[in-house]
Length: 89
Image 1 (cartoon, rainbow, N blue to C red):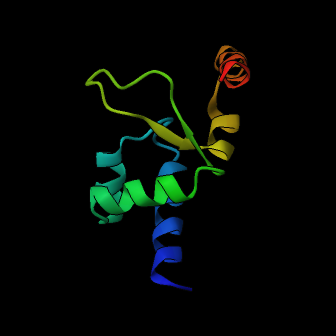
Image 2 (tube, rainbow, N blue to C red):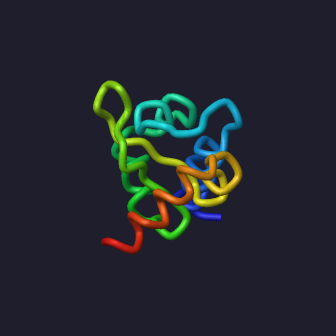
């Protein structure tokens, strides 16, 4: 396993942390020990596994989760809105 693979696994694990529905880059960075730049690189290179919220955090920061975690934790309204958003883009 390469260093990048280990970073990807650490970020995915942080995104699927049961304590959180959505995560900021800063939160992922704190949990994993990776820099914000490393986290952003992993999020960019793993876009097939990652969902970015269309609504930012109250502080205006981007929010992320995995597709798997989203399906598991999102309510029906969020799933419908996500489907509509994905069709219109």
